[in-house]
Length: 250
Image (cartoon, rainbow, N blue to C red; front, side):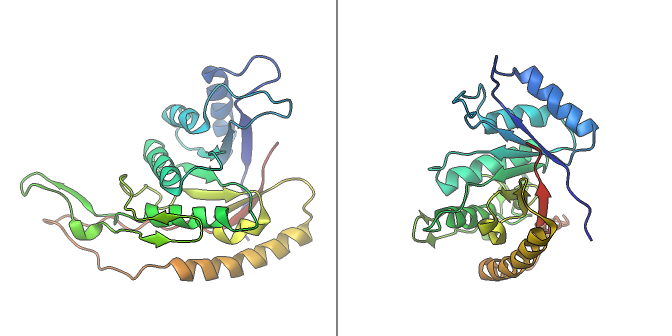
């Protein structure tokens, strides 16, 4: 049995004055000190239509510089955002946060656009091998050409060639979170609200494992041998975390 995750949620808006950056930093630092695993940084509109002061990914970059351990899950990125932009933003944030970034993907839709967006973003995060960048000034070699890979995705909703123009994220893949159980097979983390009893959670966990195995097999790349560059040991590959289900604090 895995230990439960403790995840909080902070909105960048308020019924009175919008919170300042200092307000958000104090809240996230308090959550980090209290042992929270992650916090969802949400810039969506409040129920009364109040808009946030900060865009979520920009806010995450600022919070990353002021925290050390807590995971930072960005939500929401615009629903019409192209996969390349999603992958680039989240990869950049993962570098800034030293491997602590997550992305809360949108809800499932009837024609599968969100599921395809997630899978294309994952493919773009794999554009570079872990040891593709060698920074060899003596030989004038910045990266290994054979360590860069085009995606050449042609799907129902997206046509993306790649590669991404950001180095592989420290995590390999930033954590993909969802709130819609229909997307559980595409995600690393499912955030469940109130109303899910233990039986529902167990059933969802079983379905998630089956779906996840199918999706992982479908997107698995052929293995490439690790290479050494002038005596350097290649970085160990990063692995996606096991899928987890957790309750998100309102």
